[in-house]
Length: 64
Image (cartoon, rainbow, N blue to C red; front, side):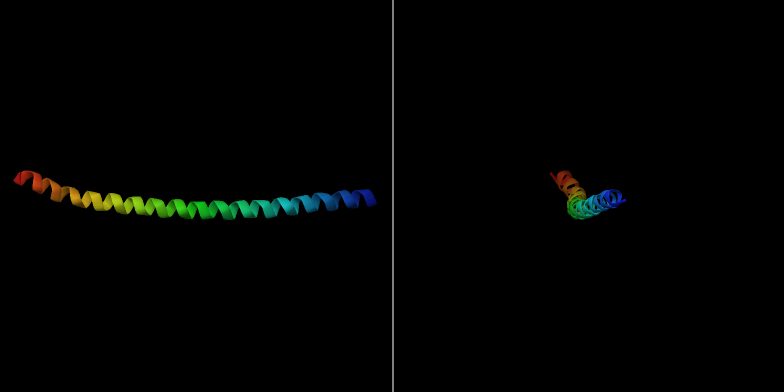
């Protein structure tokens, strides 16, 4: 019975370590995701601003 208890305790400890590891990985991935979202937002703003410039450039081309 003692061996079974100690084996179960080892398994439980290993599972707890895995849980901590996975929690840390999830946090890292969430941070990376936030960074990616911020870069996408920045790119969308750049695209929006370049699109709004295009009609003005077309008008300028017509005059030349």
